[in-house]
Every structure is written in C-alpha cells, then in structure tokens.
Image 1 (cartoon, rainbow, N blue to C red):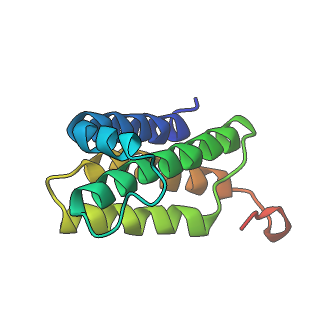
Image 2: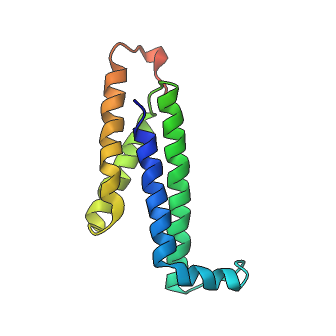
Image 3: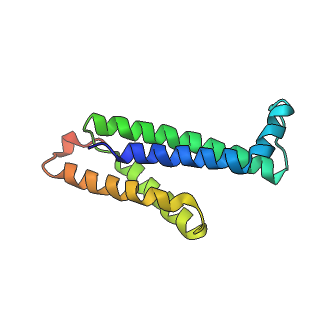
Amino acid sequence: MRWIGRTVMGVAALHTLFGVLVFGGTLLTILREGLVGTIDTQYDRGAVFWFLYTGFALGLLGAWMDEREAERRPFPRYLVVSLAILTGAGALIMPRSGFWLLIPPVLGAIARNRRMDVGRTYEDADV
C-alpha cells in the first residue's frame, strides 16, 4: 500500500493552504506590487515566501517518494535520515508547528526500508 509519499504530499498541501490562509493579505500585497523584487527586509513577506516555497518543495518530495513506492524501490538512506533529522529538529525547535505531521511518514519510510533490506544484496542497494 502506497501511503508514505502521499502523506508527505498531504502535509505539503495543508502547509500551502495554511500559508495562503494565514498570509493571504501579505500575499495579495506582494502580487499587487508585481511580485518581482517585492521581498526585502519585511518579515511577513519573507515568511509567506518561505512558507509557500517549503510547501512546494515538500510536495515534490512527496511525489517522488510516492513514485518510489509505486516502483517498489526503497528510499535512499540519506533521504530518510535527512527527513528524520529535519522533522525531529523542527518538532523540537517549533513544537507548536506542523512538523509533527511528518513523523508518521518518516517512521513509515524507516520501517519500509528495513523490510525491503531483508534479503537484499549490496549490489541491489540504491543509496
């Protein structure tokens, strides 16, 4: 069953939707000003940019993970470890955030890779 990448894509969609809802006014101001060169030192404008940018990047990562699941290929270890570190650090540094939503897919990716490692040879490894 494919759920890990799809869960990451769902978190990305929620992240982006939340960003649009919370920073909607700021986003409209940026768009009204022509988008290009409209973010400099304004905290709210930088926040909306990184919020939406992160949502998009997380969506791409989730889509790629879903593709790996569909192909029945393991996730690269560096990806799982990196995502676990980012998720753990984010949840600890910002406990009132959505980082917690990434814990299930991270644990799922770890468990999935462990199951797939059984019976694999070094030549089969995709890291």
